[in-house]
Length: 202
Image (cartoon, rainbow, N blue to C red; front, top):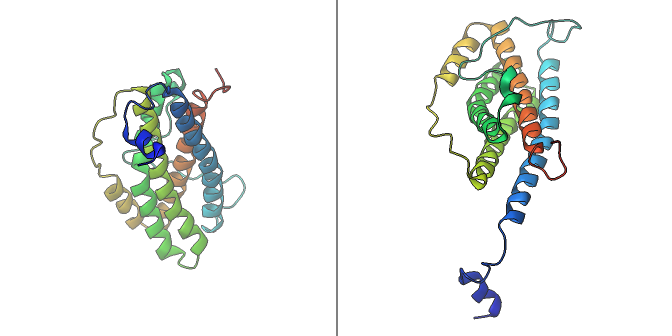
């Protein structure tokens, strides 16, 4: 057995190495992922609007507000919470987004079956939300924060599916709302993680 192999198997071999660099690396990687996904989320929202036709792409169009079961935009008081508390909310929102994005993708597959890039972006967004949520959970665990606890499977997807079944326009509005929430929460997660990045905002 080589000396290298021995050091890997000996739990005491690296006892002098501080876990801090590992935590900083995890935070930096997760923040970089959130920053990248913020750009992707903006592209997804723009492309979604492009494929919905009028009045969605018209200047000044303000769609009717549509509640999304199980998910809302970051609350005004979000910034007043501690960083771990904010990240716990971020992780919860990121966990709720994939089934909603899947519902939107299925709806768009019927409404815009030739919009292959949009469908691929929606599929990617669901997968990326899961990945970012898992990374945020790992950061929270490394920080010693209390776990969120099991999140009950809400009737989020079922309620969203009911909205899409209500007609073409409600389905398009729901998709716009979900894509907007995805952008908001990914951006919020990036900002919250920046509080932990060395040299980031105080």
